[in-house]
Image 1: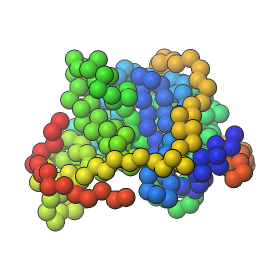
Image 2: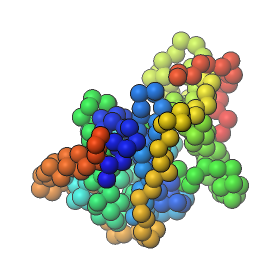
Image 3: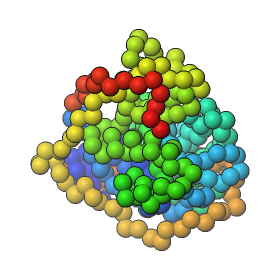
Image 4: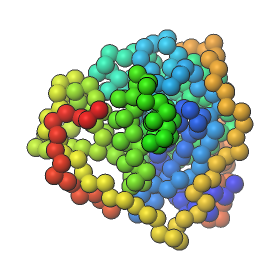
Length: 292
């Protein structure tokens, strides 16, 4: 596989991951020098547990939905589930609602009790891409976990779900990325996600109270992005998929550590992948609470 080189992507470049439950797909996007993400590959998820909707409580066997950030400390090369990274649940938003749970992972072994499980071969490739980005000095990457591709048609199909209002906010993040090929800013205040916004006045986002009402905020302009014709290289690449399974395995607890794992195989995988080879301005739109 020489897809990284073919697409003109750098192995050390930042990555962005999108997960879609209903489609059982995980996408990897790579950042290019123009500041936009380009599609690298879509991987079939072997299995995930629960139903459509976010995780609420420890033991509900739900795979999380939401906007998550992965740091190097969340990577586990010695997992009992082959390789794993912790998705970061519960995040600030989840905690603001009193949601509980731990050890929610993307991992191998193709079995899940609240996680997103891949085949061992695919988690090796995904883990390697993340590892190389961290090795290059990038502090984190984002994972956006969606119930389904947030198209208008899919939203209409699920309009009677109790999670519809939550999904409307999730769709704002989906739509922003689809339009700009950049990840939106994500704030948490008033027990809501707020997508593509910043405090209107001189307030640090770190000072926002995730439970208290949002201060006056302003949305940034979303600038549409069309890649130059010379850069459009097979951006619909999808790994050959197997059956989509959604069974709940009798597995619980963390991706435990076992014997140290050699990095040689992952380094070789990265070498094989390599082969031969505009900042939005702000708008004047303001609001004091998110439109959920």
